[in-house]
Image 1: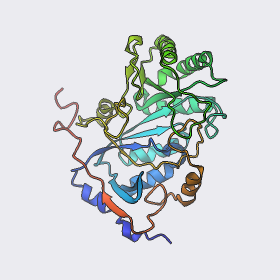
Image 2: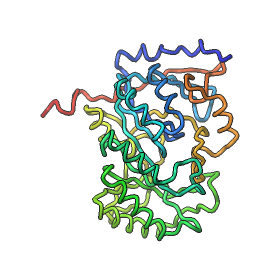
Image 3: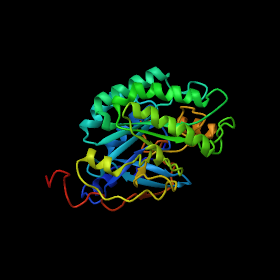
Length: 332
């Protein structure tokens, strides 16, 4: 039996009602919460807090307040939002502001064995956009990779078909090239800069036919000559528009140098996503994945169950992001 009493559930939420600490929640770069852990997410939002183990030291845990008054916006990262669709009514009723970073690549079961087929993924994307509007769903075409069967010509044809299907349902497309993370299949080799530029130019021409702006995610290569800009996937300007008030937030120092994302608090856990994508950097140890799935419970305070006892649990706090102006519309 897990010792649940030592976690102090509700304490952080009670303290945060003073409104001193606000933040952007990332849910999550580390795992696909909408696809695999939606019920757990809703339970944590109802509870008003979540426990997040330190990725490098599991004996240290952060308690993060999740009341609507403390959360400026939730950014959901997913490759399959279908399980989350029935939960959006409650998410809205609880009073949260949010948007989705939705990856649609359609590489098939060889590279993405746990994902629905491309047609179903596209349909879910369109349904989500119909619910939230194009501003609420960014399309990520990520990562761009080449293998013996995924050739540049295949990529261009495939990208064009997805632009045709999704261009009216999103405001932008964000892409990046595959990086050589440890554990990634050797047949997925990093692209040379010449290959990147050739593909990027063709992508820009195709996306331009659909009026779809292109951005790169955490890419040092400069592609502005093709009209491609650097993205901030966790975008402070987008958060302001969705939240309805201005915020002050710095760039996230914990991300790669080329990443433009605003600072956020990620509530996910590595090695917990069962989607099985062979290019994934976040789940690389099957034994840890099996262990995490075995201890997960929808009512647990952590994605990986309950603390075992003896962990150091501290409140995750920070300065308010909300600027003095209380609404984007105050000065109109």
